[in-house]
Amino acid sequence: MTPDELFTAYVGKNVLNSSARDHGYKDGSYRKTWQGREDNEHLAELLGQLDSRSPRYADELYGARRRATRRLRPRTPELLLCTLRKCCQKVTSGATNLSFR
Image 1 (spheres, rainbow, N blue to C red):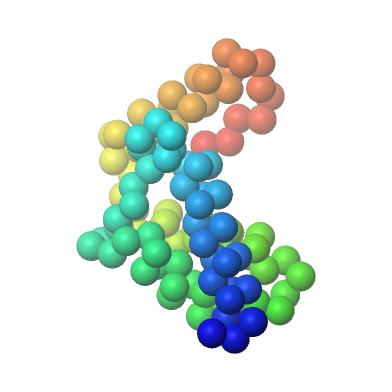
Image 2 (image 1 turned 120 degrees about the vertical axis):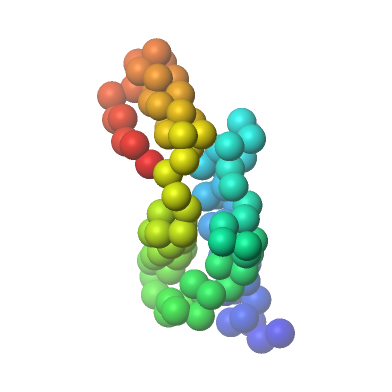
């Protein structure tokens, strides 16, 4: 494995873990599999589409992963309830930024 490949794999896994934490890993609502493929497989596909030399590589990868999961994952009632629950938690905690992701 070259240093560039190691860097790409490390950043990719870090972004995947961050995204999982941000989208329900702790509360159990995170979906690891979409369309019969695990999130790691989708990540590997995205890694090949982006320039790892970009100074914003991690941010670009996070955004690409987010867009990909929105395309792949149907908005089921479970996911809508989870989104609503997260929004309600933000409101009760006094947050002013209420994004519906």
